[in-house]
Length: 233
Image (spheres, rainbow, N blue to C red):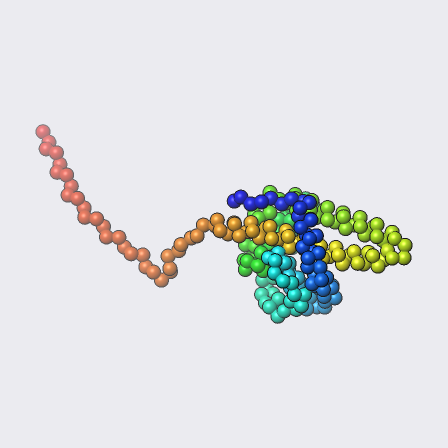
């Protein structure tokens, strides 16, 4: 499976470009999610809706901020919570081997929810596909996240040091960071979604005999006459 590898700087630049291109709907999306994330039950639908917006953004679709309130976001809530449960249990188990394995598995399964929602895969299969798609690129994902976090922290520190306007500038910057963060998730998922599609395309197809179909008995071939016993002297 030959696919293009992630690159740290080009990925961050593409995320900034995608965020700027969709800045208005993404700001509204981030604002609506931040307002509703504290409301019980509704926050489940808006969280799923935010994942779906990132999926749409990765495909180049038009973003509708109000789509986080769609009724379909509450469908298959059982599967969504089952996915969260598997992720929590798996990462918690990895924590028993100290911090590094948990970090690695957190990155490996980082796109499982997107695959679960986008590809209609089962929770376990989504985790396996995410793990396989991120194989060989986990350190790149890690460094992208570290660089993005450091840049965000540095800018917040610089803007916050400005007298009088610092608080306002940091608030505006936080909104921009949220927008770029959503766009970054979309850029990363687009890359790994293509890898998942390639993995699924390479998966062998198993043909099973229908259960109601009885196997056809083979007709035994006619037995050849035995050779006559050699004459004994």
